[in-house]
Length: 119
Image (cartoon, rainbow, N blue to C red; front, side, top):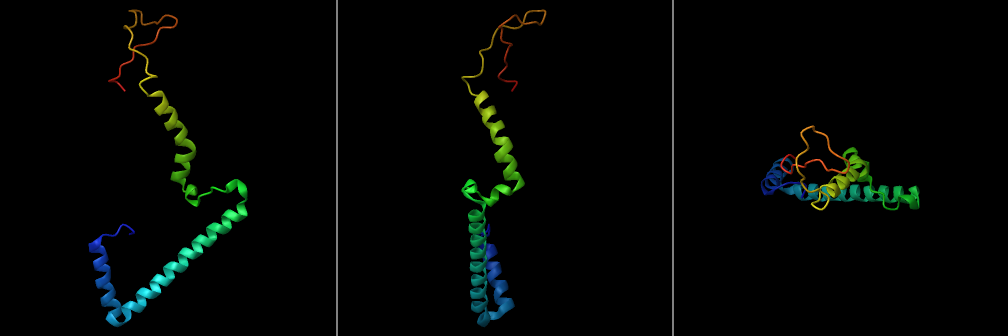
């Protein structure tokens, strides 16, 4: 629940008792719950209005995708990570060949040596 553990919840209850007193604490908790419910309802209504006004192209639109970190990861880095993972599988790694000739040049079709410990 919001990243709070039992010690933090207990501290909030004690602070609530000290600030509101035992007779007004239930009323304050009820009002806080009502306010939180109204905020959730407003957010859900805004999201529904946004989805209905954007049209069918944005049927799967998620406002969290507008976060810059999520946007970059989704649109830029996913393709790079997928390409990297596809190229780094064991099937795509060429077999280690003999060392290059003393001149350092490879012939046509020769694969350069590949050191698995270097990457």
